[in-house]
Amino acid sequence: MQKKALGRGLDALFERPLPDGTSPPVSPGRLLELDVRKIIPNKYQPRKTFSEPELAELAASLKVKGILQPVLVRRAGAGQYELIAGERRWRAAQRAGLDRVPAVLHEATDAEAVELALIENLQRQDLNPIETAKAYRRLIDEFDLTQEDTAERLGKERSSVANALRLLSLPPELQEAIESGRLSVGHAKVLLSVAGRTAQLRLGRRIIQRGLSVRAAEAAARRLAAPARTASSGAHNPVTEAEERLMRFLGTRVTITSEKEGGRITIRYHNMPDLDRLLELIFK
Image 1 (spheres, helix red, strand yellow):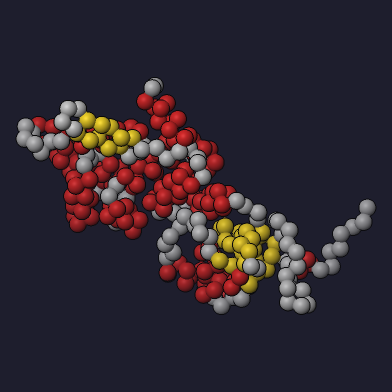
Image 2: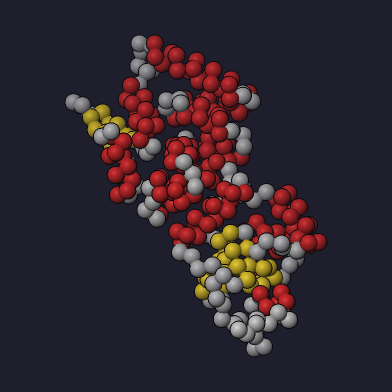
């Protein structure tokens, strides 16, 4: 058996430009050395915020040690490559003034690109809770996955995915507060137990302004709920409460419309597998 030549060392692993300046054919799984300008961000990147101090710190480290872990890319056409994972390293490399970065080529569909980017960020715990929830929602909506499918692919419990998705039912103002760290996931769970978006906003703002702990927020939520149960005036809205209870149970948006006689309940589903999931819950 003919032995493989070893004399080229690490250079044998990298795809370098041919004498005419063009790139040689690239096979999937091959380690490349790519011009940073030929790499574009992942349009499915679940992480939307990058800490400036952390990027500066990483860039300083890369100037001394270089990039020890290659980024993961896929072909994007026109001689470009799209990041699947490693955008933070790529951004820091540019700050450090590096012209080229090591990269591994991977053939991936859009769904696989989302999945790989999400997995990498989840494993590194780089995503905030809202980014995680939005990534789950994107997988479900854009690629016809159920919550069970999403959980299985990511090695999560279905309840973890469902609980994360519930965060997206909070008002946008509160979602932004969770993203920025002004509200914790513990606070979010308390807010989700409160009926009505107006009441959620009022309590959320109070938590932030007064710096309430989760336990203090729970006590405030109980005080908020007590008058609603005992009041005989129109302040207590059973329709709104029913909407909230159904949304918590079904994990999707529910609208109850009152009419002259009776009314309608509208349950939103995202795709056929999601409809099957809802039917299973309803007919249990």
